[in-house]
Image 1: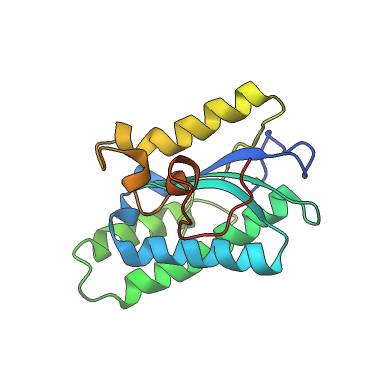
Image 2 (image 1 turned 90 degrees about the horizontal axis):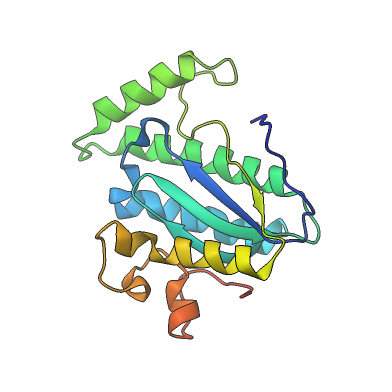
Length: 182
């Protein structure tokens, strides 16, 4: 997962994005979104992840994260590694998945053409962390992240989207994942 982009100070909030190879709309299925939320929950409880904001779109994930005990790049590596294996396994085992063969062929093709993988590649290699060093940057990314489902036509209001922290910010209610609000 080498990249020319490197995280800054790990205790400072960072905006990160993970994108599915080929921009495949894997997360149009709830069961695959649940795998991502389970992984985030685990990292919050066991790996020092501080989750400030998040959204799972149909083919990518946006997070605002930090950590006082772990490195951002190691957290991202662990999240991507775990979720990629678990989601590919879920697709392999889901005989009702109408797009199964097509998705697995693309993941396999991409994986075989990347020396960092053996079989499948689920996520694009990089994640381009952006250190949110000013309040203006932080507010811009927070709004962008939460309004993404609205811009995509998934919901009318940001806080209606289940797989997002918008409800925590807009309605002051608890969403699916525990947050350290900014």
